[in-house]
Image 1 (spheres, rainbow, N blue to C red):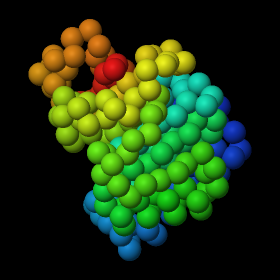
Image 2 (image 1 turned 90 degrees about the horizontal axis):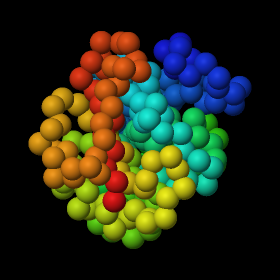
Image 3 (image 1 turned 180 degrees about the horizontal axis):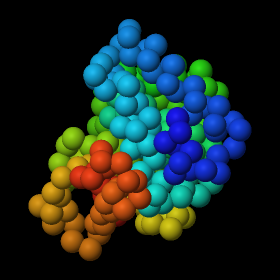
Amino acid sequence: MDIITKYFPDLSETQLRQFAALGDLYTEWNAKINVISRKDIGNLYEHHVLHSLGIAQVIRFEPDTKVMDLGTGGGFPGIPLAILFPDTHFHLVDSIGKKVRVATEVASAIGLENVTSSHARAEEIKTKYDFVVSRAVMPLPDLMKIVRKNISPTPHNALPNGLLCLKGGELGSEIAPFKKKAMEWNLSDYFEEEYFKTKKVVFVAV
């Protein structure tokens, strides 16, 4: 938990309580439904919670922004971002029902009122959002084909509406098709831990 306050020192009492609760909740749920590698659950705050908050280093969502977290798994990056941005609405989507259940139960347990969820494939979601966020394993061009229909054309944040992904490694070939519509940030510029050395936030505008 200290690693969260190290980089986000201005959290409210409610936010501190919500972040602190994630450790026990995910440990308990992960014992029943494996949403995080058993070997990695001890690194929950660094590898999952703080990694999710990497998106907050490149954009601060304005109130009433609508965000879809695609392939949320157990609720990453959506739940940590929903704690940090209580005036932004997050819709968590995953095609695996038991993972959505974990994310839904965790959000409910910590009292997040700005989170909804769907057990669905991305192709089934027709709603418009300002941003789609994802800890993406799918190549950006493939992901963009799926989510383009879900991104509203009307922006009201510092970045245009689009796709924000947490990815790792060399991304030149994935970004190339988008030319000036894509941006990337190295999380090692914001977080000093070794884990973030190759981690990035990538943005693609619609």
